[in-house]
Length: 239
Image (cartoon, rainbow, N blue to C red; front, side):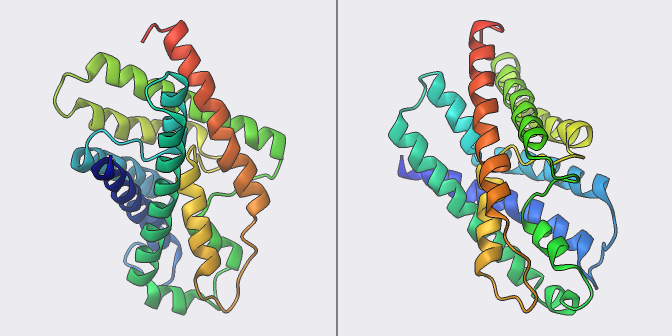
């Protein structure tokens, strides 16, 4: 269990290093790839998650996936709560590593970049703030995402390397097709870990961390999508 929890911690941290790192690279001044755009960012998220799965194997790196496994009876409540906390901590540590890597660029960008945009390097935010619709988008995207992962694992899990590669392509597709409204967090640890890191890092010009949005949309909505995904996968797909 300790080994698996360490894998969840390190896997989530590495996912965030890729993901938050690419946003820092794209947004901050004086980076090599400033202004590269959303395709650059989404592709890095997809490839990064594939690498995490290749390195650490059978990990959740997402409390919503742990929730789906809880509903399916694969894990118990104590493990669900423990792994969720560990993954959030991994998200914090991964974000702090990104800050250290890009500290010079963060400093050079303090006066020139809207502090809300700097916050959004770390955490997700809606393009248009409409909390009921934002909630639905995150829940539905998570439902599609987790259902697809469980189908991939069940039907292609015996093919070496197929699951990590397929999940990477899935992240790319979901991001491109459903990410334009809320930023497709689909993962409490992906959003809350970096959001907490942003809160504790030193800033001269800080935007609010917007925990109301963070707790409701990327926090609770993925769990709703996870429950529906588990039930759909079991009772309709027969996985």
